[in-house]
Amino acid sequence: MSGRMGTTEGSEGAFIEVDGVEKVFDVRRRKGLLRRERHQVRAVDSISFTVARGEMVGYIGPNGAGKSTTIKMLTGILTPSGGRLRVAGIDPSRERTRLAHRIGVVFGQRTTLWWDLPLIDSYKLMHRMYRIPDARYRENLARLVELLDLGDLLEVPVRQLSLGQRMRGDIAAALLHDPEVLYLDEPTIGLDVVSKTRVREFLRQVNAERATTVLLTTHDLQDIEQVCSRVMVIDHGRLVYDGALAGLHEVGEGERTLVVDLEREFPPVEVPAPARVVRVDGPRQWVAFPASEPAAGLVTRIAERYPLVDLSVREPDIEAVIAQMYAERAGRAPTQSS
Amino acid sequence: MLEGLRAYRMIAGMWVRSGMTYRVSFVVTLFGNLVMTGLDFVGILLMFSQVDELAGWSLPEVAFLYAASVTSFGLAHLASGSMQQLGSRIRDGSFDVLLVRPVPVLAQVGGDRFSLRRLGRLAQGGAVLGWALVAADIDWTVSKVLLVPLMVVSGAAIFVAVFVAGAAFQIYAQDAAEVQNAFTYGGTTMLQYPPAVFGKDLVRGVTFVLPLAFVNWVPAAHVLGRPYPLALPGWVAFASPLVAAGCCALAGLAWRTGLRSYRSVGS
Ligand SMILES: Nc1ncnc2c1ncn2[C@@H]1O[C@H](COP(=O)(O)OP(=O)(O)OP(=O)(O)O)[C@@H](O)[C@H]1O
Ligand SMILES: [Mg+2]
Image 1 (cartoon, rainbow over the protein chains, first blue to last red):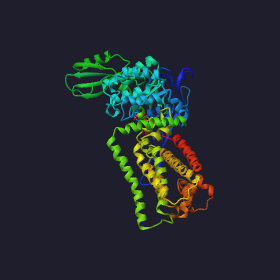
Image 2 (tube, helix red, strand yellow):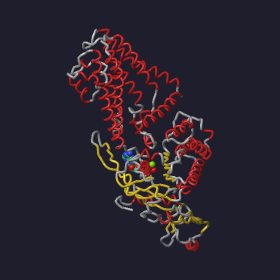
Image 3 (tube, each protein chain N blue to C red):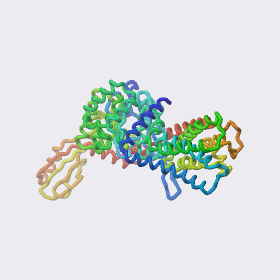
Image 4 (cartoon, rainbow over the protein chains, first blue to last red):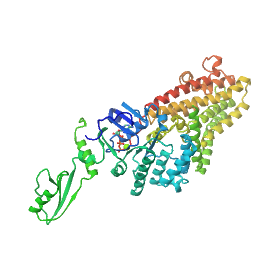
């Protein structure tokens, strides 16, 4: 693993400290009518990382990897089964209420807004609940309304808002009290391209203006590409990558693909290893080869022996790299440690 | 504590205004509540059309028991928000949202889904209580006059404690709402009848174990000058506030323990 993994940055400057944290759920599963079977799910398995103030970190991994569970421990909703956790020097589960003043949380799948009341009412409640000084509240509200384009929505009951509008409303609600860190669990789930772009732009802007630390989970890699300077990949509760997004290419042993169109159908073309034909569809064939090698040699070799009509080279796509990474790990025995 | 009350008021206020967006349903359910809870009393009236007394208690005396139980329960029900259905809040995941706010969770749950519709039960209980106090044959003394409001408030606190403990249990076992209902609705119905109607063991249970008897049975027996089925010293009639305080303290502990065991839901 490359990147930051394993290196503990000095604890000064570390705003979020996670050290060997785990979460084990006891699950009882019905077996037959009365018999119940107990077993344990290691949702988070000995994870360590630190996040500095002002960083923007993307947290990705397949379904059930442990992303939401990590966020819930960082916000104090869940108590870790083991390990040490500090956010702004506070132990979240012990001092959840005190921490709440300093963090903002957006759950993409739920809302903190009052369903039947106009949007502005929810904000007024935040104002009082968080004891935000009046001037500060007015200033923050004005800025958030401007950036998230909420002006026309303030008087609309939340239940009448579209999903994208509601998400923007929720994000604003999480930021009214000037939190130092913003956690977003799937903030772009279900949004259209325009709304996603707007949310991403907004997050960058907030980070630039207020140095808010951002930690977001997502299944959309564009969120990471456009927002985060750092990505953490979690799988089966273990951190398997921590570093720059670009670094994932190397980890995933990136392969490029040469797509060749021949004059007519052929059996798979002969190419020197490690290049290999991965797919044949009529006269078109796909040849995978290491990203580090030039394509020219391969092209020449095929052109010499086959009637080549057309060709194109596809760069390794980050989605594919990650899909491959997930798949590889799933194939390995679960005891395998990273 | 003060912080909790402040949060409770804020949350309850939001729900009152939310409720106002559905005016028609508000009026209908308020009225419905009044009728539904009134039916219990109609049952008692019907019974007394056949008999003159129940275990030696006259109609106004039973009405006094009934009204004290219903009024205490109504107050507690009004104040305990969605504690009864906490399990469903947990299952749909919305409980997580309460946990990231900077105010006590119990206050938020107490204010959650606060609804003035629940005033129906309270109004009905209060009306019957007023009538019973006038109609019953009571030797009024100063201490008895003071005991009546003390009884209602302590009774409400005891029921609140049961609601809180039930909510704590639902954090642990999310489908346990029925268990709680057995204690709350079951308890309030039982307390509407004179203790002598029930077996000694049951009376002992609700006096010494789950002290629901202190909601109305014990103080009401004193006010009405009726013997209590168990031999208790005289001062016990005034012990309801102490019992209530003890119940609330235990319920508070249970709540904290429950909250610590909270495990959220997947996703
Ligand atoms: N409250 C719970 N009780 C029991 N098991 C749980 C609970 N919450 C999560 N899990 C289990 O822990 C594992 C991690 O779940 P988690 O919700 O953290 O995944 P995730 O990475 O957020 O996945 P997704 O991308 O699907 O949201 C899963 O196997 C899940 O079944
Ligand atoms: Mg999740």
